[in-house]
Each structure stands twice: as C-alpha cells, then as structure tokens.
Length: 345
Image (cartoon, rainbow, N blue to C red):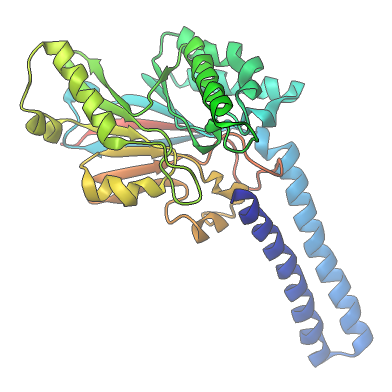
C-alpha cells in the first residue's frame, strides 16, 4: 500500500511538471509569438526540473542524515507534581536497512549521541525498527544498546513493518522472525511492550505507560489489543501492592501515555473509548516530503506530524528517522522528539 502511495506521489510530481509546462506555454502565447513562448516554456520548465532534481539529491545526501531535535511541552492537570519537567524522548521508524553503509552506521551513532545529549528521563520507540526482516537490525544492536547502557529506561513497540508481512515467509517463519526481532531489542536493553502496560515511578508518584502492537487502517494488519494492555497494567498494579484497588477511580486519576505505531488508532479507538492523556505514534514519515508546514501525507492521514489535541487528549506523531522506498527525505529531516511533561497549575 505504501509503495502505491509513493508511486502516486511521483505521478503527481510528473503531472505538476506537465501542467506547469502547458500553463507557461499558453500564457506566453497570449502575449508573444510561438518561438518566444517556446523559449520561455523550455527555460521555466527546465528550471522547475532542476529544482526537483536538486531537492531530491539534497534530500538523499544531506537531509536524511541531518537530525532535527524537536522540543514540545505536554501540559496536564493529571500529571503528578513529581513528574513536572520529566523528559520523554521519542524516536520512530528507524528502518535500519536505510543505514547499512558506513555513513549510515555513523549516522546511527550520531543519533544515539543526540538522544543522550538531551538527558532524557525516558526513551520510547514507536515501531518499524526494520523494513522487511529482523536481520536488518543485527549490526546496529551495539549502537542501540548504548541508550539503555546509559541507565535510561527504553520502551519499544512493534510497527507494521516489524512482522515480516512484506516477505514470502510462511506463517511460522514470520512468527520466528518477529520473536527474533523482539529478542534483539531486549538484548539491547530495550523493554518490549506487546499489548502490555507498566508503571513509571518517580519520588513515590507514578504514571502509566501502555504499548500496543500495530493497530492501523486496512490493508495494514491489526495485531494490537488495547484492552489487553490495560489488563496487563491492572495485574501489575495488583502485584505491586498486593490488593485490588478501586481500578476505575485509579485510572481516572492516572496520567497515561500510550505507544501506538499508527496515528489513525487515536481517532478509531483512543479518543472514543479511553481517557488516555497522550498517545505517541509514527508511521507516516510525512511521506518523506514536507514544504513548510505542509506535506502530501495530509491526503491520507489527518494527523501526520507534530502535536494534536482533542479536548484534554493529545497525540504526537513523530515523522521518523529512516524511510521506505526511495532513500530521500525532502524537507523532513530525521526527527528526535523531546516531550517535556508539565503539570498544569
């Protein structure tokens, strides 16, 4: 589906050039002769093509290796005072096959250095560590292990590309590949949240962190189960205090963060069925094209990049580190998001 969408974007670009060419020619014909109009047409259409080609080359050689650290504040009355100023770093959509070259490996090291430089309290990864199969991550585990080795808790979920659905593997082989990918991340010190929930504690106060497997729009597969994540959180609560609390009251009072790869999950289930305060997603990559604050991703995803609010509920969509298809990021540098939690006064 994503390949079809990128093909559509390329087709649109070609169509824009053709339309631009015709508009320039016939506009010129109104005020000048045929030969002059043809010359103007060639110059301006040629200039447009040069701009497109230079943008693509710049996006391939420069932008996709130029890290952007985005600072965002999330304010909530439910946030415990102990968590005021708490820093959550989000990364997403590594697609490590993009970085198999020597330059790519250096870039991943630079990304780790950049994350550690902001001194986060928590690091989360919102899916798509690989594109096709788990072996793409093998050579990067030593670099990724540095995050957890710094003493910072790292939590991760699976994205649509992490299930080997884009291979010709048989079902059992796919399951083994997913298990292998999860083990690789665990070996790096990352904690996988596969339809699970955990409590994050600080100075005797707590917030809830939930993570679901991929829940997206068709044709992307649905493996996630948000009620199961809440159930897991409830059982971990019982294990920690030994008694059953007033669960509904506790959940109403608790600040909750959800990791869910596909941003469409926010409107399909999170908003209508829960009071989750903050959902963190990825998936869109802003289709690897952004001009100012606009991206063609908005044709497919109402929430494609940045912070969104619906009442007291918030969604942040990280535009990713790597990508799929053509290795180009035009106006969309790899994003590291620093979300600072603030207690509303």
